[in-house]
Image 1 (tube, one colour):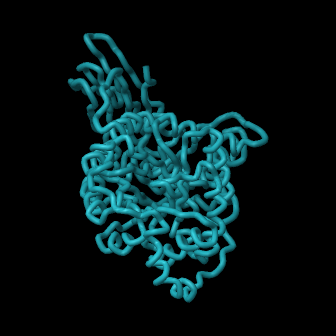
Image 2 (cartoon, one colour):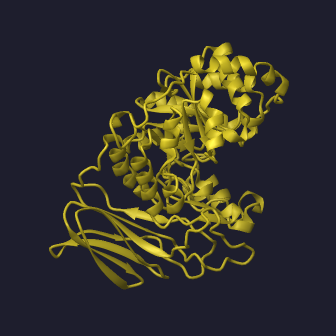
Image 3 (cartoon, one colour):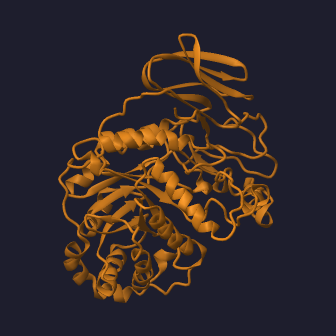
Length: 478
């Protein structure tokens, strides 16, 4: 945790009026023409794709072999970290794809790998979650800036997490520490000035953010444009933050209904002359809190892209790249390999190019859980509740998401019971009821099998721990 100074409210109040007078000139905030640069419309080449980077979960924590490293011993094992995670079966249900020990400099080398993985999928930059002003998470942020500089062609936006200890620190001190990050060549710029993002912006008063922006400019010569990302993107919050923000965003719900309900958010931001950053998400499952959102296989992911594109979002934030504790990650992992990143790549092209890309080769993605939603928890563990997305029915389905260059037959098999579908050219989704046993899918055309998958994740009737994330596997690109 950081050793921050106390928040000095009297200091903030004393500069309040001056800040309000100077912010528009100093932050580079200016109105945007509504609809001028959304992902699905004119100016689509300006559409930017970000992924939220969470420092606590790098590719490797200790550079040990996977069978005995920190993830295996302490995060995946219910007895890890002295048994503190036993009540929920371990802190995590997934981990980054293991690799062999790298030796000296492994942290920076791993960060370069992550930057390269994201860049290869069409992601333009990471939004770095800054929680503390010292310690391992802070150092990871500094290293991420260096890794992005080393790789090149990739930005890192500084994002202040208002729910963490940094949000309780004096904004003058926060500005002093953030100035170190802004000195990196990889520090993101928007509209010619540095970019400052946020998580749960409404958790700190507007005066705190104004003092931070003022401090960066007055003490360090750093002009920033502020993007306020809200948990609650209400009209009142947008109005309160509009005078000193260039754009807004919503963290978002991880259900189809949650994503579809906010298709009008970009229009609300545009009416205020501000840009809008839409959330893109796969799922959300939190064993430690015993709660999850029903993502309905890839339906939530696809709904989030539809909402961003049809709603006219100017940019998107994939939430998240690597928060394994909430299963929102899309980075290559044991539970879904490269599959979610491969699916995202097609939608990223759609968002940036302004029209759906032509499908010129066949791809097959298979998603399912490794247990039923109503599975009994093991002794000593509490059950999981779908309370993150109220009103969305719990789903026990296996899904085949297909990208087809021509019409074909799609078959899904669960525990030996096969169901077939006729699929047209393009992108289609098919689901069947999930049950205990193995899960398979295949594509055939004119009697020839063109793609086949057997999931390595068997559906258990009595699981060892509750795990309501969706697993995924996909065919390789041609």
